[in-house]
Image (tube, rainbow, N blue to C red; front, side, top):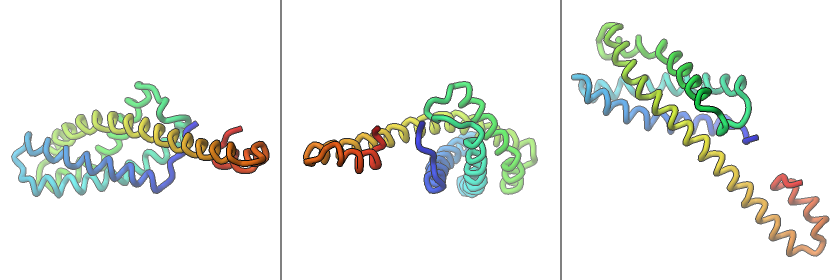
Length: 174
């Protein structure tokens, strides 16, 4: 089982996700609407702030319900996760987009749906890459710690005693 994420890593993941999402969303909206980049930037920064808060809260609770190694989640499970997340986010963002861009709810809905379709694909890809990269990094750190223990154990006079005292604690080997 993979090590659980702490609050600091969750904040890092959410910020990384949103910085990339905002930049790409502004470009997309600029291509398909006649709103000024400044208005779109301000709107997307506010929407991203809402999304970061939602991301943190939603995933905190989601991971409490959906336990197990995240890198082993199925395609169907990941699709379910993204749709549930984005559907909840729309409830918060449509009124914000309508107000800031001075458009009606239908126009805000259409714009938000366009962003949501993009972000849904982006979120799927981002989380898949993030989970697998994280698992790789954690495995690499564990292998590195065990390698250091092995080197010390080989150079130590009482290998068995040293291994039992130190190596088990640092790399978790039996």
